[in-house]
Length: 237
Image (tube, rainbow, N blue to C red):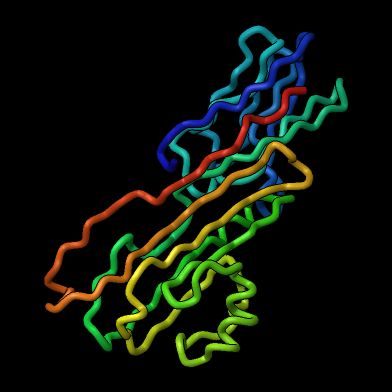
């Protein structure tokens, strides 16, 4: 979660005196710190004051990252030149998504826009995303099928066109009817053919509820999105 800490640690069967830690998930990869014997250098990056070296016994190396932000989500690399080793780990910030509230109250014939911003998943290099959408009218469908087939066959239900970005889908309802009430769910699963240990999923649900009074006078209850975490720690060298 944001504002938390994460520990990246690698164990070896021999002493490691020279290594480098980099952040790869941006246009130009950044070296965060490097160690040569007794010399430890932290590069002047936005991580500098939040990263602490772990090098207790020279067989265990790594770092601790504090006060995590969503921009920290992505790929980190440990490079050990003497071993010709590059070991990578993925940091997933679980509250990265911008999603609708858990409950949205509307009057009959009102309009509503439901939008999910999952674009930070692009920071997770070498991964594949599967997105599934559930609506009260369409049922549970893969997002690409919903846009390319279901909407085409049912154009009167939603005022929506195929998005240019499948990680930022939206649904627009201009005239809510009784059949539109119910649960709208985006399910996202992230896997990787490169990192076979990666299997992570999120479930973001929003209830569209009809009310008989002006919803602006009502208070909204809040919940936490359901997160199913099947991720393991990085494979050890």
